[in-house]
Image 1 (tube, rainbow, N blue to C red):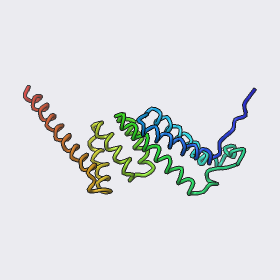
Image 2: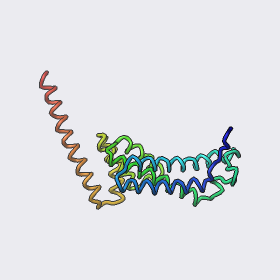
Image 3: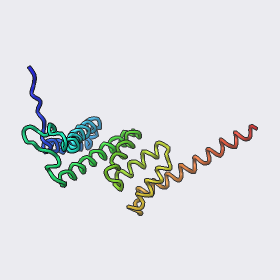
Image 4: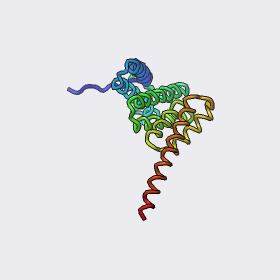
Length: 187
């Protein structure tokens, strides 16, 4: 008894991803972060299934849906942009959940993935800055913060992060100076 495997069309995959993202947003609002992450991940899986059909489907006809023979490139550029926008949104939403959970490594991972889609996305730049800040990578904080301040030079949020960075760097310099003075004083 073998089941016949059915494939969703790219439109069905996209609609499912949109629905999952919406459900993830609802879970986030009630602070059910575990469920929110799950919904966003499933949304991304649907979107990546669409992307894989686009890249592989051009040369391999078996990636066509048997019911509709629908491929991503048949849907046009607007559809591809919609898929990318939704994928970017899911990545940033996942990063937001990881920021709430203070999981800096995953925050960094997802915000950098989002920046691969849109290098000047303010939310992703801010998320990456926060992740780098908490990881102690102040050079990358400065780099991302400079980009943020170019986009929004008067943002209190970004200016506060800049002040926090300066304080942290100053504290670290004082700490290092004390360590070096103790080290060299012993010789």
